[in-house]
Image (cartoon, rainbow, N blue to C red):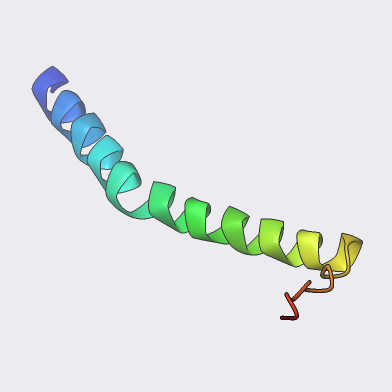
Length: 50
């Protein structure tokens, strides 16, 4: 029974590493971009005139 629990734990850790961590990264990046857009207005672009 101990080997089965060890295998199940390793399988669960691998699935979390493959699917959950990248998904959380995408979610937090989306939130960061969303909150950044609310707090600040975009800076006006300065163009060179020649």
